[in-house]
Image (cartoon, rainbow, N blue to C red):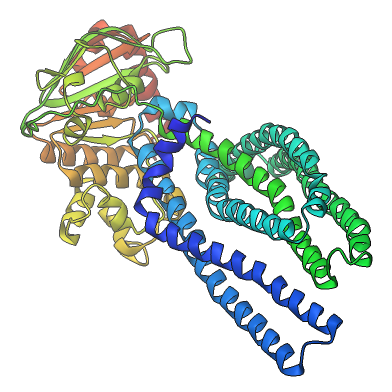
Length: 587
C-alpha cells in the first residue's frame, strides 16, 4: 500500500494520541529491559553457588530483586496494554466513524457498486484486522525488536562467537517469512471478499424471510448458505495453512540455535572459557529470542492482514460521489415556491446501454402532478433524479430557476419530501419513525401529520399507540400502514416539494381518497408529484403526464387523456371493469 494511503487514514490519529503512544512504548521498553536484567541476577546466583561464595542472605537479596523487578513488570505491562491497545480501539472508532459518515453521504451509484454485505465486512472484519495490526501488531514488532537487540547485546557480551553460532539459522527465517507473507496477503484478501458475500446473503435472506417461507425455500437457502460457508472455511484453512507454517518454523529455527548453544556452549563451560552462570544466562537470553523470532511470523501475518484490509477501507472512503455538491460562500435562502424545469434531460444507468430517461423536457410548478406509464417507462428514475439521488449533465435540470449542479445537495433536499416505492421504517416506535425528519417535533405535530396521512385511527387502535414498536423494516405493520407512515413522515417535514413514487399502491380506494384530501389541504400552493397507475388517484390530480421509454408520450387532464391517449383509455377501461367485478351484486 502506498505511504500516502497510510498517511491519510492513520497518521492523523497517531498524531493526536502521540503522547499516549510515547508513554505506552516507554512502558513496553522498560518491561523488556527489566526482563533482560533478571537473567543477570540468575547468573550471579549460579556463579556464587558454583564458587561457594554466596550466603543465604545474598540469595534472599537476589530473590527479592527478582520479585521486585517482576512486580514492576506486571505494573508496566498493564500500563502499556492500557495505553497502546486502548489507542488501537480509539483508532478503530475513528475509522469506523469515517466509514459511516462517508457511506451516508454517498449517492445511489455508490450503493449499486457496494452491497450491504460489502459495507458490513468493511466495518467489521476489515476494521478488526486494522485494529489488530495497529495494536498488538505494533506491540509485538517493537517488543521483538527491543528484546532481540538487547538479548543479542547481552549474548555478545558473554561470548561473541557463541552468539554468532546461535544466530546462524536466522536468515532462513527471514527469507521464508517474506515468501509466506506474500501468499498470506492474497489468500486473506480472498477470505475478506467471501465474508462480504456470505454477509450479504445472510442479510438479504433475513429481510426476505416472509417471501422465503411463502415459497418454502428454507432448505434451498440453507443449502446455498452452507455452500458459501464451506467455501469460506476452505479459504480460511488456506490462510491457516500458512499461519501454521510460520510459528513452527520460528520455533524450529530457535531450537536449532539452542542445539548449537548446548553443544558449543557446553564445551566452553567445560574448558572454563565461560562460567556456568554465563551459560545459564546465555540460554535464558536465547529463550528470550525465540519469542521475537516467532513474533516475526505473527507480526508479518497481522501486518499483511491489516494492509489488505486498510487498502479495502481506503478504496471505500476515497470513492467519490458523482453528484456535484458545490459549497457556496453565501448559502441560498429557502425558496417558498420552488419548481423543476427539465430541458432535454437524458440519463442512463451504468449497468444499462439504453437510456432510462431520454431527451425529457418538462416543468413542475405548484399543484399536484400525476405521472404514469408502463413498467420501465422511467417513472421511478425521474423521481430519483428530481430528489438528487442520481447525477445529470449541466443545463438539463433546474430547481427554482438554477441549474441543480450549481446548488448544494443539502439545499435542494431540504426543500423535498420523498416517499419511495418501498417505505423504509426503522425498528423504533411509530412516533419516532414519523418524526425521523424532524426529531424536535412535538407529539401534537406528529399526530397531525398522521391524521393528514389517514393513519391516525390505525395507530390509536394499536396496544401502545404511537409508542408501538414497528419491528425491523416495519414487519408488524401492513403494507398500506407502512406507506401511510412514510407519507406522514414527509408531511411532518412540511417541505415545499413532495415526491410520492408509487407510495400509495397498497392503500385501499377509500383511504386513498382520504389521503388525497389531506394532501390537497396540506400542500395547497406547493409542488406535489405523484407516481401511480391507479386511474382514480390520477383523475384527482391537476395534470397527468404519461411516460413511455423515458420520454413524454402525452400530458393533460384526466378528461383530455381519456379522449386522446390509447394507453390511458385501456388503463381506465381495465380498472373500471375490475372495480365493477368487486362490487357486491344487488339483492
